[in-house]
Amino acid sequence: MVQREAYILKSSDDGKKHVCIDAENEASILDFLERQKGAKKKFQYIVGIILSGIHNSHLYGDENINDETENVTAMKMFQSGANIRLYCKEQEGLSGTFYVIVAELLPKKKTQKVTGDAKQLIKKVGNYEYKIIERPPAAK
Amino acid sequence: MSTKLLNDHPLQNRWNDIFAFENEEAEIEYDAQMLRFAFLSEIEKYQKLQGVKKNKLADKIKTSASYLTQLFTGSRKLNFETIAKIQRVLEIKFNISATPAKDEVMIDEEFFLDLKCKFKGRNGLWMWKALEAPTQELYENDMDKTLLQKAVAHYDDKAIPA
Image 1 (tube, rainbow over the protein chains, first blue to last red):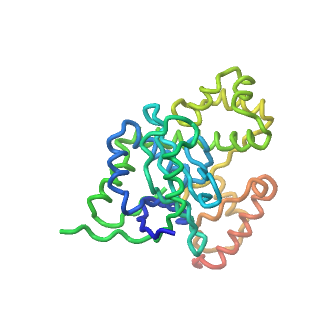
Image 2: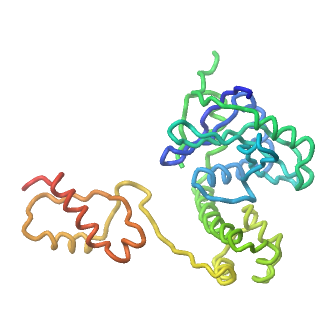
Image 3: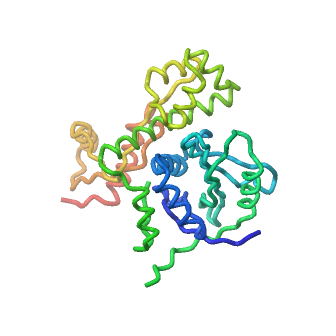
């Protein structure tokens, strides 16, 4: 397993579910959300349904291709017909707290099928193990 | 949902912008879409349980599969007519309930006075505390009794004698 760190972005009202961001890929994912038309709104919706416990496989769901990737999920952004996805890792904390960590961005997925590039990325995320940490202060 | 501000970090500030709404209208639009997604979540659940594919559902409600996809992705707005049609096809019924969004709630004065009458003879300063919302079953069968029992317990603990 590859050890990685993540920060909490948003939490459910009961504090039992959290959406987090991979510390290393944070800036590039932010760039995408800010740049891509409509991405911000779609991301808000997907985060909303995750934290509210609303099921919607058209927007968020499993992306497991084998046993090693069973905790990998995808936020299906569907922007500009390019079928862009944000691959996530679901992790459970010791007290049953649920974390969805936004891990990797797949900029383009031309078909509904899981292509070679996507498979590689899904396997990569399946191998991530996250430590949820507090964001360190900005460097001065 | 609640946002946890970790610190005044430039990247955190960018995330705050991502989650911020431009105005109240945008916030209401978001809330409305979350309500639609809640209905669609139940529809998807029963579609799977009954093995009703999207094409079949679309045919039965006289629309296209791509229109249904657009509803699920939030590109189009689900309306109550479509919900009613899907209810018929899937033979399901939506049960609507509401819970207070905040701990403190305003209650109807008449209801409060009626409740107070049932405690005739117990003097003191009356206080109201929002309790856990009763289940639909309790609400239908025994709401008054349950509320009264909880209110008595609360009265005994908290009421300050006059």
